[in-house]
Image (cartoon, rainbow, N blue to C red):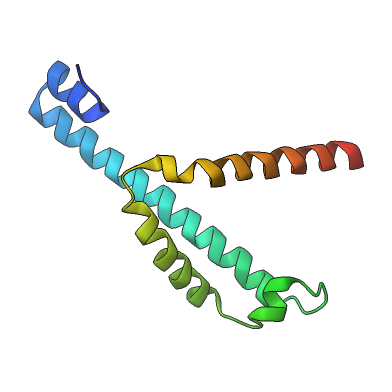
Length: 111
């Protein structure tokens, strides 16, 4: 029984198709990850230069460049990508879902 799209393509369409599926999956994954790192870097850089809002990022690390934020983010994400048991993320996943639900409730209440 296949456990990935690559294995499914290999069983149903052959070696060439599975290589193509692997290449496209890799390209999509790298694209999504790099875009997410750029998004985090841009967001933290904008907070780092925002003196008027008195946010925690500006108070701890003022005027840090976007490239530096992106490198720090990539450095934090790389060790996380090496984890093979995703059960260790159960707490942070639940915390993230709770935060998103809280944000939705605040937005709905405000609106």
